[in-house]
Amino acid sequence: MARTYQLIDALLLHKLPRLHGHFFTPEPSGLGLSHHQIFEPMMRTLFLGPGQGLGVELATRVWDVMV
Image (cartoon, rainbow, N blue to C red; front, side, top):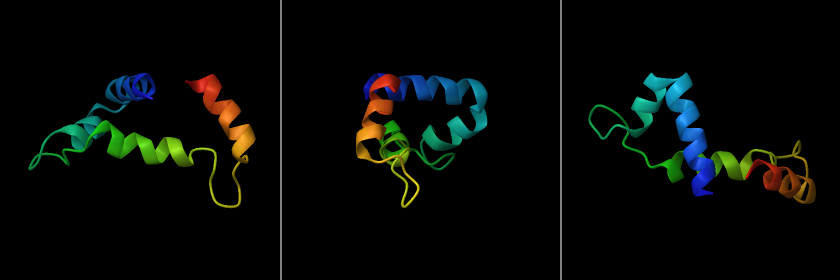
């Protein structure tokens, strides 16, 4: 997952640098969050949303392709 987090981080920095700074700049200027705190819940629930997810088997296939 570390490589996935690095890719998402680079994309966020490129596309939304102010948001990236807000998330990762230490307090008091920003939130001072880690990549794991931001990206892990997003990746975990990306395709398994309540009631509308792909299902575990199909979601793991998609994750394999992404990673």
